[in-house]
Length: 402
Image (cartoon, rainbow, N blue to C red; front, side, top):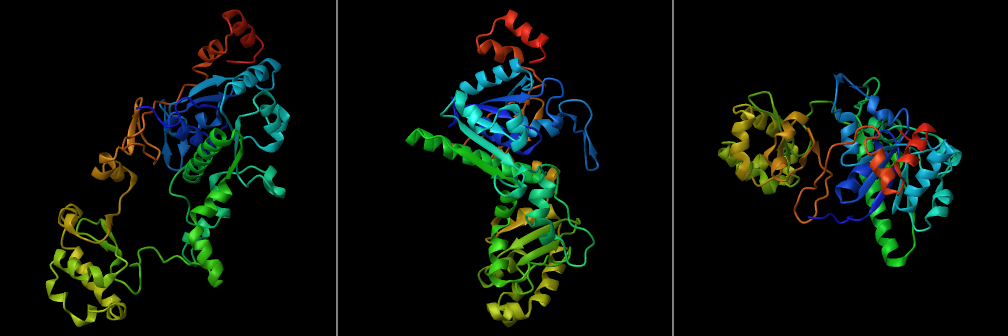
């Protein structure tokens, strides 16, 4: 089955996680993505082996695979005139030019909007930045930790009061991946506009803007009230007014999350599933007001009851529970979740399983492949441009390509 972007060509001049992850999404939607890497050093992400306490040795390297699945790689030095010539030839044939380069570097290498549009007036020009395309700081770089996590507000919002420092992101490329998906969506919309009107667009997405958007509900709420959202201390129950919103420990030291926003609607059903039938008609829990007043008592009762069975036992019993609930899982556990497997949210990409992009078309998982080796398809791509072997050897001798 072909993807919705079948036939679309993307030329990616980008590094690290953010913008390349947009290319990965476009590739899973059916586009052909050519990744341009420096002829000598390649994408610096290839050298990332240590992330937190985890270290990867050898290949494949998940740190490069996640954002570069299914692409083809050409090693190219844009600072060499012959390399720049090859880049522009590729741009002539592309529908999308995708870059993470800062304004100064785009101008230095002659790959800014006007430069690329000079050879391809109809190309979609897409930029991923740290801090957006306007303002005094638009020329500065950044990472998801700085722009997405810290500056946009997430770190401070989820760090409990009086906690030294901050709570960090849950893993590498967290903000990068979210922002990259936003950028891919913007590019898809720009392609639709071009098809309908003939007009190409310049698409901008920043880590800062994506981080703010992810926290948009909180920003609206706190700005309206003029009050800061404070995080609950770790391990707290949840809602102080609703015992059916919060965490409960199981007998095997796991946790189950209840999120039932209408306690009176679900109270009787929860009681039946947890062998607490005698509490169904208890006046302490008969109305929303009564439940709110007696939340602490209900918390104690539910905690004691939940600790009588293991998570697998509760999971089987809760298959018929009407209200929303979920086991608290780490990523190893999530990867084995039957619902995740049923929806093919992990796909095989060469030797590795990778999380697929979250958009599916026609109820099918996207097909993808492994990330390319550094400059792996250079010769093939040059031949597709119509260059013969004599010319390819000349380019290699000049240091224009790898």
